[in-house]
Every structure is written in structure tokens, then in C-alpha cells.
Image (tube, rainbow, N blue to C red):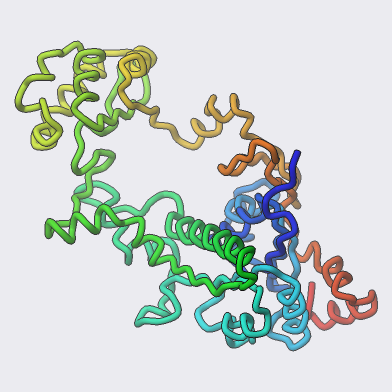
Length: 396
């Protein structure tokens, strides 16, 4: 097997919660050394969001922090800042998602670090960016989903709902990850580092592109439509005779013809002017859904899925978490691995980026401060110094 593409890259992360740890875990997946700097008094607060993993480990933390080294130090103390400074001086990337202005107050603002370390890539993550009237506004996932309009297009006509996964955090983490990769590529050509900013609000605003353009150029926001699509029909979950609903998504008129003739046994629907085109079907959505639902509800689920697949009509099972865990596609493609953790071995999925010639890192999830002593020894601290730092609560 070949080396992973980020082998030899060191990332120092002053991070917490979801967005930044999601970015750095992906860097670790691809071989980077990620040194996670945590507070001595409890560390990353995502460790204790919940106790969903056996032994009390938080589910978010287990998901986002494998393959990292945990160093517990108090960056508000002079000696703690000195240690952090040494770590950053030896790093390729410094990523942080502290409260706005906090990194600068500690002496780790991007401008200063880039002046001192021209090859360093700094990544500052925040809710709303470093300028503007919302700069200091609290920015949790649900709040950003609301502010950026995502909640307005998700839910039922009567009730807006947030996305069930933390999409604002994930979006920001993905852009921080890809931005870091781009900066590393450019540095390989120019020798120069970069200062990168990623705001959760900007990330979700980008993901709202279709809804934004609809509003901008029609004057009306797209309506909330449960599972259905505002400009495509049929596109929804439909009942079966003996099991969970099946999701059907017809993208064009050819797909409608395939559904009508190959699944519904209603070739007349192909030429009926009320249903022949997508625009007509959207206009008569209730009738279309009733026709499709009446036919599918008379079929056993297995037969419906078979007929849809044979006709080439896009479809999916309406799975929950149990369905995902038991999904045959994950099992057949060997996507499950075992990851060690402070509470024992845990199941985890391989990351989505698959190199055919290199296995992603799936190293243990660290206990708080598990690597503090080892990292301090790398920096030249002897046992007596480490003991003094621990006794003074500078490190843990």
C-alpha cells in the first residue's frame, strides 16, 4: 500500500464542537498528524454532549475525533501559550474555531502567525465571519440553519423544521477541509502559506443556491413540501401493501413514461395532457400523487422495488438509522472498521474518499490529554518540567 496523501503534514487544532473537528478528522483520515489542543478542565465540550456511546463517550466526539492526538493545556497561561506557540511553529496548518477574536487575544491571530511563519496555513472558522454586524452573534448549527434560510425550505407547509444532521457544521467543515487542501497544493507550488476564513453562515448560504435563485428571480421563496420537490412530480414517498413507504423520484418525462407503463400499468398517463409533461404534473401534483399511491399501495414492497428497478425508475427505501447500519451496500463493499476508544472498540465507517492504493487512517479516539506527555517530550520538556506543569494545571 502507498502512503496516504497527507502523510508528513502536521495540523495543530484549537477546536471544539463539530465544524472544526469534522474538518480536521478528514485531514487525519488522509494521513495528517492532527494535534488536538483541549482545555484541561473537561476538554472539547462535545466529549460530554451526550453519553450515547457505551461508557459515557459522546456520540459527536466519537464520530469526529478518531486518529487525533489530544494535548490538554491551558492556553490562557503564559507557559501554556508558549507550548502552543512551539506546536504551531512546527506545524503546516493551524486551525481554530474559538469565539470571534479569542485567538487574537491569545496571540494566535492569523496575521501575526503568517508574519512569523510564512509557510503556515491558518484556518479560522466562525459562525458569521470576522467582520459585519453578526460577527459576535452566537452561531450554533440550528441558529445558522435558521439565519441562512435552510429551515424555511425544510419541513411541511405548516411547520418548518431543521435538518436532522448538523448540516451547518458539516458544510463549514467541508469547506475548511477543501480549503486547506487547496492551500497545501498552492504552497507546494509557491512555497507560501495562506490565511483562510470559513463561516458557517457562508457555507449554508452557498448550499441554499437553488432556493436563493428561485426567490431572487421569481419573487417567491420555494414552498416547504415535505419529501416532495417544489418543481418536480412525482417526487415523494409512496405506500406499499406490506411494509415501509418507498421513495420515487421521476426527474423527466421519459422517467414518467417508464413509471406509467412499466410499474403502474397505465400507458394512458403518458399522453394525458394533465400529466404528460413535468410542468403539467406539478400543476396537478395532488392527482399525480393519488394515482401513484393507489397503484403502489396494492403492491408488496419487494415487488414494487423490483418493478421500479427493472423499469429504470429512480427509487429508494425510506430507511432509518437501523436501516443504514444494516444496509447491504455497506456490508458488501466492506465499509465497516473497528476503532479503539477510551471506552473500548467501536464500529465506524470508512471515510467517503476512497484511495484504491491506500487505506484511510482509522486510529483510536483519544482520551483527554492522552498524548500530552509524549508531545511535551518531543518539545524537549523533561519529566520534572512536565510534572511541574501538571501540578500547576498548565497541562493535564
